[in-house]
Length: 589
Ligand code: ADP
Image 1 (cartoon, rainbow, N blue to C red):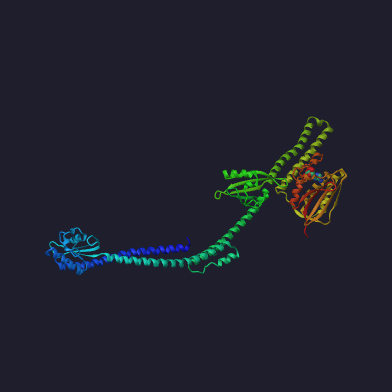
Image 2 (spheres, protein in one colour; image 1 turned 135 degrees about the vertical axis):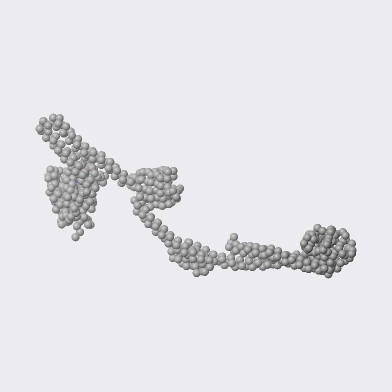
């Protein structure tokens, strides 16, 4: 139902009710007033008649009594009845004399009864005698001993016709009210409708618009009006402003929260109760190697472990699992996924971590322990075997005992080297190695290292040269630099063939100096280059040779170079051999 029809109905029903209630009250009051007025009149007339008649039973006969009633009736323009104290009627202005005796005894008429009791009485009822509604008034005559009754009656139609004309007026008033109501409600509804429609149009435009358009629509609100519509418009404008600032705040917080989530190392997915993804941070697609997850279901990702996880979370609210996924380059990644179901929203929050590195570390730790044990066991077993041989009698043979003692010494040295290398590594790892960074002329240090190791090369007739740019100063720790250079040059000698050459060169790369040690030895297969700087790693070929080694030297080099803020690496030399290089920060002049 439209607002116009509602207003019409409200006004019309209110007016109708008002008119109806007024009608009831008016009818009651008019009837009451009329009755009182007639009773008053009848009482006056009856009193007058009582004075005229004096005593009813004193009238000689029926004829005289009835003719007196007739005369009094025509004089008062009403019906007059003379009733004896026993209720018998002896005269009635509306009844012929010969019929008087046929009339009922009137002792039980309510007005007659009231007259005997209270001196006068009245009643309204339909009269069978005159065949119409009559109003009766009865009064006692002047006989004090046995009073008789004089009754006067008038037709009651007068009152009814008055009420009838009142009804007509009421109908007319109702008709006028209906027309007035229709016009008034039409005007009011139209006014209210236009005001509401304007307001609704302005508010709906505000809801749809944003930015400048919204500002313009806000201005279009009738806020300057002083009525209720003005109040509503002001409230809408205020709410809209508050909402705008709240939305801005929420958007800001969401962006901040989103960037925090994006900066986390973990990938995060939020899914609704059906497993449909509603949020993903940047990391998740990197970790799971899947794109544009929002809108998809977790089960659509085709990762069995995640499906299983979701199933468990539906039962237990929280679950986690570790699984491996294959990447595009056929390598694999280990992922730890934890899922939680929110108690309030019932959403699933899935957090994924890339634990490949962690797994690698833990496997490295395991490998390290087994490597240490393995590497230590060899020299220890050699020392033990040689010592046992000596104890078992070889000591007596001077020549043999020297061989066994040498073997013991050699392996003890190897053991000692290995232990001190391990200690050095752990010192570097725990930051216990104190580096004293100073400006060092690199050529001086390279030449010093060459001089100290030259003898190693002599055995294999290997020549070593340095083609280094002059005057370069690096920022490094003296001892660490010496250790790095010695290690790389030693290796170059160790893994080079007889009569080969080793060349050391330097090159400026941005703010760094790159120092390379190039040999023309056996080189390193590509697939092994990545592991060369790992602890205890030795190439298969190195293991097969007689060359002693622990596989810890390059690990120490890498750690030292990194601590000096440089980088280290290896590549193959042409036509054969390898180039080990490292960088150090150059002194900036
Ligand atoms: P090691 O004590 O075995 O020399 P390093 O850590 O110094 O231990 O070297 C690790 C491995 O790297 C060696 O075992 C060897 O296999 C390889 N390697 C190092 N330097 C060279 C080189 N110049 N040419 C070929 N292989 C090398």
